[in-house]
Length: 597
Ligand SMILES: [Ca+2]
Ligand SMILES: [Ca+2]
Ligand SMILES: [Ca+2]
Ligand SMILES: [Ca+2]
Image (cartoon, rainbow, N blue to C red):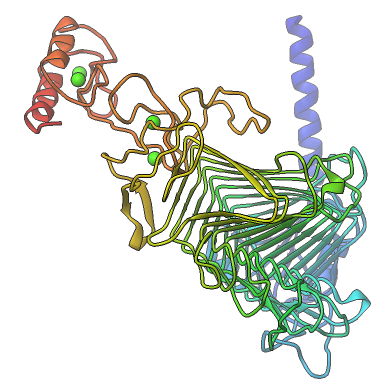
């Protein structure tokens, strides 16, 4: 580009930036402030109420909430009124400051339903706010809503796309979405999403109120596109209704939801007292129906649901506005462990319960690189339970998963995976192992195609073995492979490039530890995928020829490059060397050689 033109463009950009910066105003709200025009200039001279700060602000402005506890009208039921503004604590990166910057809604003072009902939530976002409407660095506590659909105890977000980050939302309640309720009325080709990042959503509740349904105690998502990243969702509970109740941690219906790097733990749903046949008490950690669920790098642990899906319940049946998507789910690099499903005849699938309705095929759920361990169901399928109405094509794919040591009291077989009526499953490069029973059970016209997997007791299919997988320390939850495991380099030699209908692998695939997915673990031949969620890799410094031994051959390779700049053998000083192969590099080589590595 012409240089003068480039300079001109840069100048214009600077002017535009300065103009924007010049007009952006920061308003302050403080516990001992005053709502008048003289105030709002600092934490010492703040407004009294957050709503006054919001009302004073225009697009691009910032409302700083100074440390302290905010109560009463003007400091709850906050309406962002469509503005692209940032509402922030003084230091969202400091958890102590966030903990000291509190919106106490006083709706549910004890973290449970108040008597009489006292309806106040933290924020009501409903005027088409975009991602530049940011709420961050705040603690929102004790919100409660028992009227107008009884949704969104902490935050209610409708038809809007705010960013909520570095917030704590706790001890809030409503029948739907005790912590947050998000309803976007999602429109086709709408690129907007609700973004929730670095938040802690804990000890919220969904309870009966005046609504028969009780769903999504932590977060309830309906007809929306939502991304949840780096959040902890814990201790939330959906109980108390004799009718439907699901989604202790997160409830997703008709939505496109991505959940990454989150911990979803110790959430629960289920009636008190338990009813023997109710089917609705599902999804202690996550309940997802009729949409797209992408779950990666998450820990789903210690959650409970009476009627299956203690960790995760997924169903394709209900049809919503996301009709242009297939109903599908990808659950990748997750640890689904120690979840429970008890006290119901439908206590099936404590780790994950999957239900299919063939009328919406093609539907698919993929489990990739997941550990599913230590889950416990009263009836069937401690780890995985899948059931389908009718179906002819594969719908469940289990790739590179370790499904071990799950329990199901009601059926001695299929404790790890129980595939029921018409379910069509592919299991590949996986380990299904338990101490005393058959880990995989198939009945009622369900089918399974197992290959390159280690199944206790054996299973027909290409490349399958039945050999103790050699887990490192399974009693303490460590399902990594020991160096002598026969699962190492025993997966499909064509993976991960072998095309199949699921195409489960992406470029630069990683295992559950985020280590390279295909590594040469047995020091023979080339790199072959392992069975299970862990890819075992040797790495010996000085083993330049990758045969798992530091020896004379490696010494000879180093000699070849003596006093040269050769990164392959420049191992000193660690980690990246210094551009020359000399006596310091030789010292490390010799140390590892003598150590027998
Ligand atoms: Ca390998
Ligand atoms: Ca690994
Ligand atoms: Ca070597
Ligand atoms: Ca060196």
